[in-house]
Amino acid sequence: MTEPRVTTMARDLAIDLGTANTLVYMKGRGIVLNEPTVIALNRQTGEVLATGREAWQMIGRTPGYIVAVRPLRGGAITDFEITERMIRLLLQRVGVSRFTRPKVVICVPSAITEVERRAVTDAARRAGAADANLIEQPMAAAIGADLPIDEPVGNMVIDIGGGTTETAVISLGGIVALEAVRVGSFDIDSAIQSHIRREHGIAIGDQTAEKIKLAIGSADLTEDEVPAEVRGRDLTSGLPKTVELTPEEIRTAIEDPVSSIITSVTRCLSKAPPELSQDFLVRGMYLVGGGGLLRGLASRIERETQVPVRMSKVPLEAVVLGAGHVIEHYDDLKGMFMGARR
Amino acid sequence: MASWLIVPVIAGTLVIVIGLNMRRRRDTVASFQRQIDALSPEARRGVTERIRELDPGRDESDGNGDDRTESDDNGA
Image 1 (cartoon, one colour):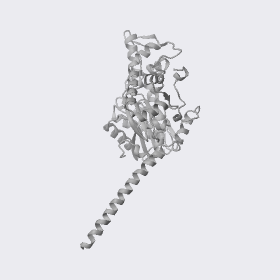
Image 2 (cartoon, rainbow over the protein chains, first blue to last red):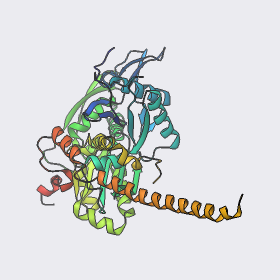
Image 3 (cartoon, rainbow over the protein chains, first blue to last red):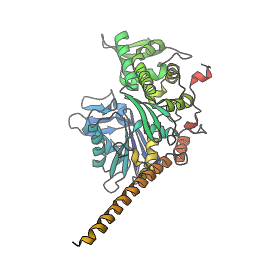
Image 4 (cartoon, rainbow over the protein chains, first blue to last red):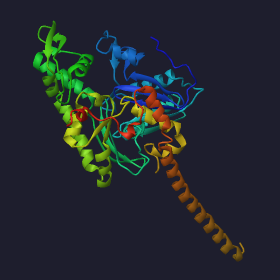
């Protein structure tokens, strides 16, 4: 199976290696790749059959000899070897070879362990990067949301991804307070799947759960709510069955992960120094990440924290744009890398 | 070694060490300033342009805060 290549000499790269999606920014060119973080393997031989969108389409639809996996779960690497192969394929797709050895900056969750850090940087180097460094996702998100983090003012960013939610207060180019929780939009999808299994006795796949979330899921009461029908496999008979779902029941079903997210935001608020708190109590907190697009979530966070919430205009791309900015100003911003001596 | 050399050698070493320390301090100050400058609105112009490319409807940066939630419209 072949996939389209970015046929150009690879320049320095920034990678947002997310639980849900992987985006690659090339210096001077912008975002050159935006694909689901999924890899499809031959179960018997271990060969890679597809990555990205092609592999994502296979989820839940594979024959016995193919397995489509997400190598990252909850922001953590569940399989180092597969992650390394995926990074290598990713870099090859954007033109990295033994003749082009770009510098690579990879965005990772702040709560990443030392072992995972080494695994990611080693994987990038083995894949052909001349140098690989890591930057915390909230920092990259704040830059990508175009926040004035160069100033001595409090900037607060909430990054709700597929597997993690990270809330950070940033000032003068550094993280002042940070709260991370391994709950994201995939947990919301799982909650919908569990609810439907428990209450309606049917099994649905990940992608169907996501469609339900997008159609009628919400964190808060919204206008013009209408029910939706979903078709799945009856757990008792094994036959297809259609059930009607109401927005209220889905809201209740996803309350646990939504509450966890809001609680972590509140905890970060409580950690912020008073002087900086004054700044974002007026300027607001900025929401990035696909998880932040859940209907009613921004207004609910605002209601429960009493702090204005603003949505980034490019919530899905903010992290990689921020990392891209770091790549464009590599020498001046290398002090921001994880593990850099400051 | 001639004893008269000891004092100049020690003095010279001290001057070099102090000079290097002062240079390192200036370097860290300059390095921090370069980092801050690289995060300034002027330096972030590239980010603003990329945002504009991805979302042509906007005409101001996110940092200026035009993106209120729907609760504003409801007057909440």
